[in-house]
Length: 190
Image (cartoon, rainbow, N blue to C red; front, side, top):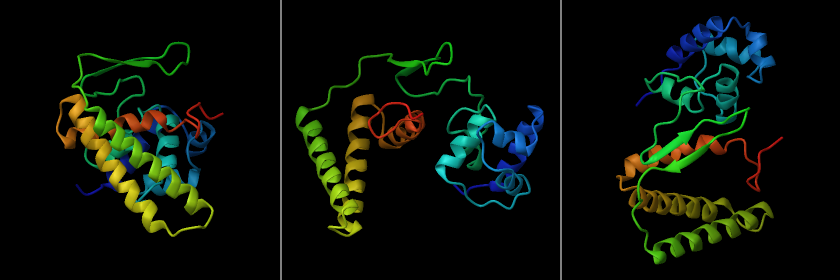
């Protein structure tokens, strides 16, 4: 589906005005610069990095992933609205906490050999990333392994959740936003 950045700009302006914020105040709340907000609102933006999308969502009190939804025809959701993920229930955080998740039904079993294969792929990907960071190899091996690991993960997720691969990709996308604030070791970034 084509991305509609003009529509997003209108939604950003409406939400900013609804919150009574200036473009500068959006930045003060952790959002992108006033110049980027202005570019969005005037319909001149054609892309945004993932991190800037997340910053804007937080500043506008939108749920993570709302910008992706908006540019593809959906609607931004309030930050308080839980994600709709098959077989997983989100519990809101209290006192500023992140909340948690609960599997709401027995998930399908996964053959250990498939899980082992995915672990081997992830290990090879990690080694290729190390080699690439040291300049010991070009990016072709790294990219190839990243794609293989992603597709294997999606197949395993689909099997585990009892959904098709399209739904598994959507679930992975939605859940991925939850980890944007985590550092390389899995702990929240400061």
